Image 1 (spheres, rainbow, N blue to C red):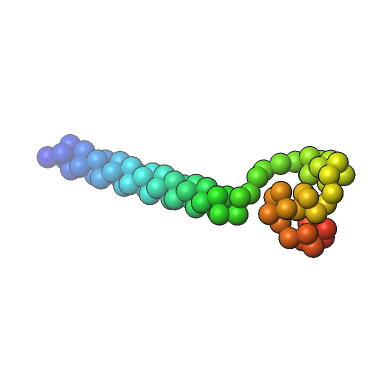
Image 2 (tube, one colour; image 1 turned 90 degrees about the horizontal axis):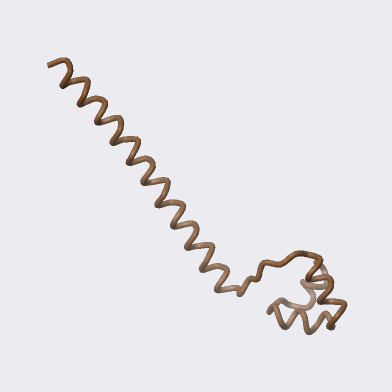
Amino acid sequence: MKEVTQSKAQYEREMEQLHAGKLWLEERIILARKEESIMNVYKMTPFAAQELYDEIWTNAAGKTAKKYNVPYDKLKKA
């Protein structure tokens, strides 16, 4: 009977660990989906600062602002 009780306790601990892992994974999926939707809404494009700098100097700052849908004043401040 003692083995059954120990086995049951071990089973319950393992189930709690699995449940905690499942919750953590679900939270990560939700966060990833939110990040993706934010990127889609704001049409964010990841790029290096040097790439942006080169593009501003190659093209006009106004054209670059329009390309990335960023207000000119905010681009100028950045």
